[in-house]
Length: 267
Image (tube, rainbow, N blue to C red; front, top):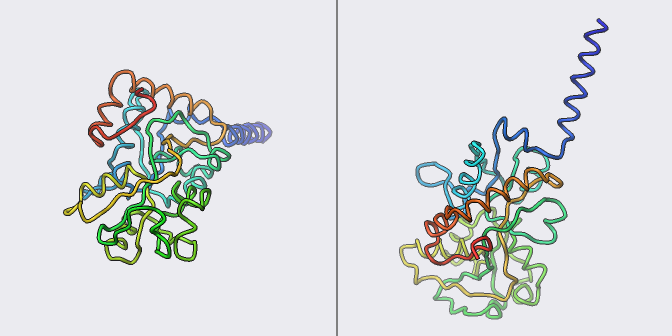
């Protein structure tokens, strides 16, 4: 009985150590890595018509973890809950066009940035909206939990002051937002340029849309890691720099964006 009690105590102690360990890299190497993503975020990470998760970030993540003989699992999540999912350990990483900003830095570790991005306003060309101030009294759509919403609130004089009720319509996915834009239920959509360019270029009539560039600060995409999980962060940074040097990152960028991309790792 006494030996069983000792064994039980040791087991509890081991579980406690594992559950409180901020570094998850050793666990990942022995098991799998679960990456959280918005499965509608074309072209970064999304579910295609065949039901498979694909995209730019998916290819980059696979290339990074291939170096460690780890096969990533891609888990669709509610994007507005991404940090909560990470903190609760239902996912190991946020890797899906995840922009670095000061608010997020307080709650997640960021890897080195691997892709540049801008916030743009997408409108229907027939609306004749060619600048942000022409959204005066108009309805704006933004994805909940997105960097676009963050920039809208942090720089109210650029766009928020003009829109109807100074409050945007929030969407769970950009797919639904584009449907409402095309149906004229909203007048404009604040969105990542990577998504906007890809989506518009793949429409039957791309000329029906206008992409209005803005003065919102340039953004950088990076991988979101649990706070203080330095081993995981360092491992991904090492992997990103390796694929930047061996040409794999450039190949993936050109596959998805052609010549229209900018990566801090490829300068």
